[in-house]
Length: 443
Image 1 (cartoon, one colour):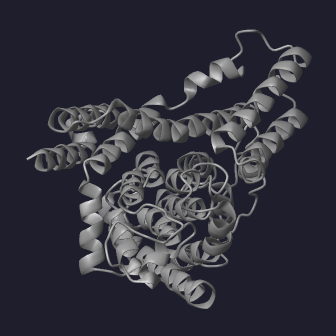
Image 2 (cartoon, rainbow, N blue to C red):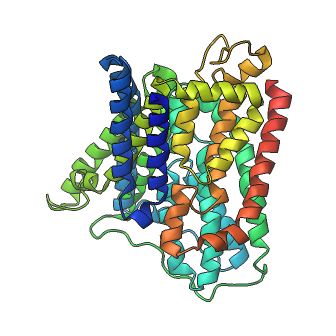
């Protein structure tokens, strides 16, 4: 009875999250209610200890603290005009070449920033330089695809990869080395298809100035903030590898350095007022706290299902009736085009624990299959790829897609007809590359 109640709460809550715009209720509120209801029912029906709840909350908060630090660094860079050094270098007037420039910049930028922030920056820039609305739909679609593909191969590029990395399912080095080429392929296939919509000699009518720096901030200081901010984010995986400390410690060190720099150099030498909107104490208020609360609700809801043994039962059924990691991960990728990839990855982490002995939640598992679930095993690498890249198959399948949908008014049916088939081919092509890598190097 308890199991049915917990599943009903989770499914009902997720339906409400998916129908957020129709219900006119923020998904963060729904996720928090779902979190509270699941743990309340579980506590009433089972002798759950406080230590169990605290343990799950601690692991969840590690991820959230890391995200808050990274999001603040991105806000600082943006506030001081650091991203202008990237966008102002897009000077090509060729429509065909612009598509590939946007794809490459987005792919690389989203590996450092989150895919949603990258999408916002590039689409806001795009609206200034491309007047034709139909052309912008194609460019915006490429940005969404590149943002999701770029975030999937980096340990700090997407929330799902951050979770896998912070919880020890994958290491940063193996994630980058193993997934970089498949993610490039997953972008090249749909980008090549969309680039055929433009003639190579077709040119833009005009190219406007894309970004302006805040008044009172020198160009040299903007560049310094950009370099230190990006270096600080790249420092985090290195810091974790050398010290063994959790990533959120490294990101807080990077944030502290950047904060001190802006306080000492900018607000004293540039004499900006105490109430300047560029002070980090002001920028913190711009952090998207509802997103943080949504992640808290989702992750803790999944943790409740894990504690109740529901995820273990699902894993047992998959092991028994599917028993193929490529199929399981592929299904997860297809679901991620509809369902938020954070909850899918969190569920998989709860279903399959990492073990040095290569054991899973199932019994009598053959060694080859079990080996897929060790740290850096093929299942976790596939999961990072499928959950991240799979979200591009539908416009509603990722935060980047939803942002682009709102900014450019991309219709679901248009994306399904013109983008989804090419994206599906790219998704499958990337999985084929992963299979070849696994066959050559890991099997």
